Image (tube, rainbow, N blue to C red; front, side, top):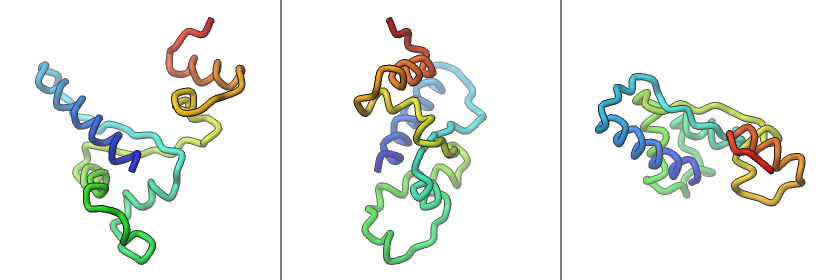
Length: 105
């Protein structure tokens, strides 16, 4: 579900930049620390454990197939987005914030 939301945001930004005159030829890369979600988005195989996924969440798969999006795995321990989603120890917080280009005082 988070991947589908990220794709919707990426589509909006891609359209916005295109409207500003930028020629976007490379796909947008989405990073995920969930290998199962990556596999599900890249493999259209349907089985009992995926039947609950709503049609709107297949958006990511469609854009991967079109070539406008790609996915890459990032280890959970290396995921800089953690600083935006959970409380972290000071050193981990500083590492994540720095990797996002945020200056920590």
